[in-house]
Amino acid sequence: FKEFEYIKTETKGRVAILTLNRPKALNALCTPLMTELNAALRTFDADPNIGAMVVTGSEKAFAAGADIKEMSTLNFVDNFKNNFIEDWTGVTKIRKPIVAAVNGFALGGGCELAMMCDIIYAGDRAKFGQPEIKLGIIPGAGGTQRFTQAVGKAKAMHMVLTGDMMTAAEAETAGLVAKVYPAAELLEKAIQNAETIAGYSLPSVLMAKELVDASFEMPLAQGLLFERRLFHSLFATKDQKEGMSAFAAKRKADFTHE
Ligand code: CO8
Image 1 (tube, rainbow, N blue to C red):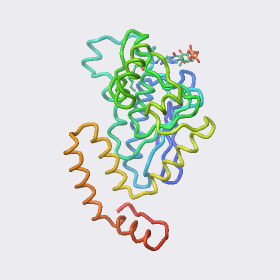
Image 2 (cartoon, protein in one colour):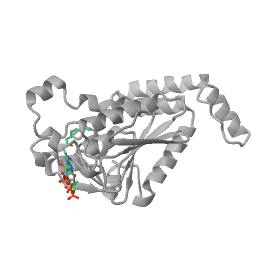
Image 3 (cartoon, rainbow, N blue to C red):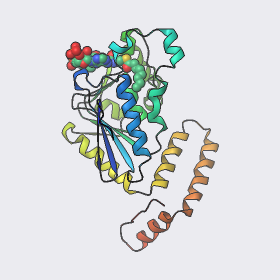
Image 4 (cartoon, rainbow, N blue to C red):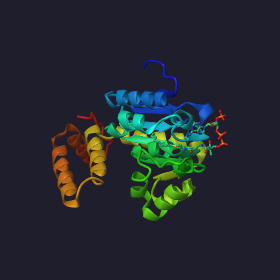
């Protein structure tokens, strides 16, 4: 990797950890930060030694949104011509699982970035929100869509129209967050969960992610057929043989991702 300015990357076994690192602006998502994040995610997605990724921020902020100072001078015609934000959505094109470990603020684009990831784990003091309405705009990267899918209309309307924040506990109850951990343990727990995922057979992990995502796009009968066919196909892998013989022999499976 070339040196990044706005993110830090490290690996732990088969897990890559990407830390948003723009502390002076509470990790506000400026264009170069998103460019670096997408580039690093794509590199780890292509790396055969990596099975899952964790995206995290600081104790104070996962990310406090898109960079308001950068956006303040934008105009409609340029936004439209440049398709502003489209090239920030690279996170959703990554095939390996991405875990968001959210401590502190996840607001606006920060909440949307977390929702583009596959699983959100939160520290107990995390705060989620879509406060764009306070700035005279609306969410632009999934806040009206993914948020509604995750928490339902009542809470989504409240959050998007008032700009109120949601606590970690509320976010877990509402279904936005998979689990809440004490803030100081969050990253370690998120990495452990990512290590568990990265230890499984990569083809089965990729298919499982693809299918859960497809459930939001497909009619049920089509989704079930897609699931059945991919289920059938996994019996062509070495890892299926390994997983099942390891079970019978009462030993831990040693997956080779083939
Ligand atoms: N953009 C730019 N700078 C920011 C942002 C931001 N979103 N958030 C915080 N900062 C800066 C502050 O300006 C301040 O800088 P300085 O010290 O130079 O004045 C520094 O970070 C620290 O912030 P505060 O002093 O405000 O810290 P507080 O602890 O008092 O408050 C808050 C924390 C409540 C999080 C507060 O900073 C805040 O309300 N921030 C803005 C939150 C917001 O409105 N976010 C939505 C932005 S719009 C958006 O995200 C559109 C989405 C587009 C799609 C993105 C796709 C990924």
